[in-house]
Image (cartoon, rainbow, N blue to C red):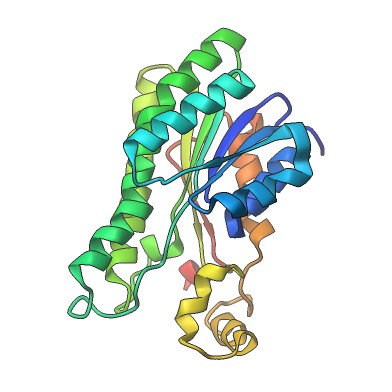
Length: 259
């Protein structure tokens, strides 16, 4: 299949690398125009360059409401509207128990991983609703949570908490949009370990190939995921194929949640 997102305008946060970049590439290949946003301005500029006029790169601190307003307004001004928001930007934070977790780490992880999702939904929904009303299409919000928002661990309390909250916030947003008849769906994806830089701190200095193999042994399918495993799911949830799917959660976890 091709052109599954033809005519759509998407904003993807954290798009300089990892899952965000994989989703941005896949969205463009399916016909969308995409705003790549990231706090790493030089990185996101470099990531967007190969896609020419179908891409726009913007510096974006997702923890700041004012920056969200600027990015969404710039998106609408540049491409003429907004149909898809992917709240992907995130950090893992420090590893350690609830006793070890500093207040600074707790606040930082929640600011990046949770508050940003609230800001994004709050700011983007009115613009999305206006775009949809004008062109008679539909919209999609996709929030990138984690399997850690469903299955807890003793050494990542801030990350567990933030990602679990994203899971439930997604459902609240979905119900709000349905109640308002906005034709905007809102869903979450919950990846397990994916081969991106976010897993590196878990290894605490061990060789990366050793880390990848070790993490893979925890997963029923015997390996960690690839960025495109999430990107393909994102295409489906943001396409018209998923027009009757909202408030749902998709586990992309190699079977770990089935145990």
